[in-house]
Length: 426
Image (cartoon, rainbow, N blue to C red; front, side):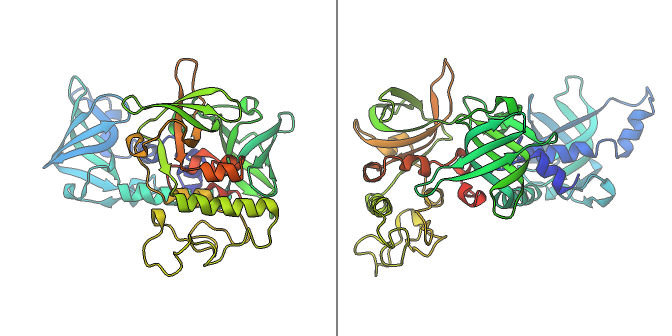
């Protein structure tokens, strides 16, 4: 199984992993099934041989020669590694044990993904292992980095404007404070389509789908081969879903239950949003919000240089000679890139947000009437929306450009930290 196959089976958002990076490791260790003397013993059909069992999961605990293995489904398994057992490490992409590296049991760490084979107990909850095949955390991380880089290079993301089912083409628009950009996403018979669950933004909860289920207004991310100017892409895989965005004012907060009630400014409707442990909550410092607002106003008015940052105009007042760190640890430089200020373009909100720490609902101290921008899951008839990202301190930004929420919340897939959707879609 080479990297291309792994990339076809996995995506990063992130970063997205089609069934998590642990799933990548599981796929690797499963691919080497049967490549051991134990497999031959099982295949021989000798009734005198004890039952050979195998389990796959992540190492939860290590105590001497005993491991506790957490399976992706089912109860934990107790593993006793027998003296003389083979302990082998596979490199990412390898499927042949002859290329594996021998390890000592002491080389294993909590979090490593393993497949163990040996004599199983009657209840299936313990194994006396004669073979341990390891995919280390470092190996999984290396694959994740490769996938991340591939998404940044060959990925696009935006809002679905139209779907031509007959021609197999989806037209995306990328929300922007300046000129609108459109991208044609072409599908083939080999394109794999996933749809996000209505109550989750996690790719591991997404289900196989089809082009016919993609609708106008969906958020969509695709990875594949792009043309020279990035206006077309032939997709190898697509993830789509409904992720509503709200710019509104707080009506009530129940920090104990994690429920927030907001009046949406656009629809005037009251929306209930649940805050989960995965929700990213950020309070934008007032000087940063004012800076954004000034730049947005300048862009709207067509002020010369308004969209072009500089070392001096991008800093808050009095900060030019300050040695103190900038809010959230980000740079205020307008040179483009590191600080989120693109030279010759609007602020890169996503890059700045990725550098801001996430708060709890209690820390946010939201009050009735506070302005917020929220990116949320679709929700169901029986459950409220779940916040993916919530921003407070945005009053100056919304006053300067009410549509700014669309650009600030471009897509949900990079909000867990990591790559920028804006970069992927350039």
